[in-house]
Image (cartoon, rainbow, N blue to C red; front, side):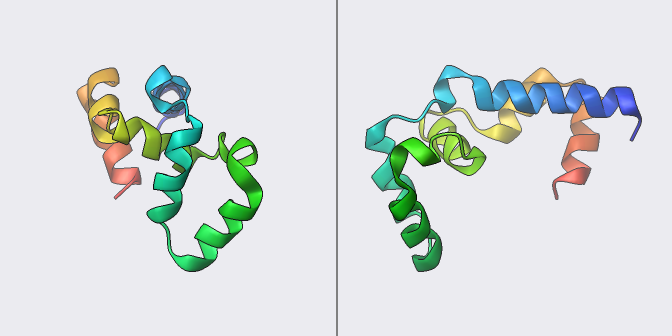
Length: 91
C-alpha cells in the first residue's frame, strides 16, 4: 500500500470516528457493556462512561447503533481502489 493511499484511508477512518453519529451519550454505555464478555465488561464498567467515550470500539458501536456502519461509510468515502485496499487490511 502506498503512503498516499494509506493517508486517504486513515483520513476517512478518522472522519468516521469523529462524526456526530459516533458521539456516545450516557444511554449508549449500558448497551455497549451488555455487548461485551465478562472481563471487558467489568473493566469498562469500572472505567465509567466519561473515561470510555473516546474508545474507538465504543464510538463504532454508537455509530452502528445510529445506522452508520463502518464498511458502508468507508465504501462511500474512499475510491474503489482505496476501499479494496482497506478491505484487504481489515479482513
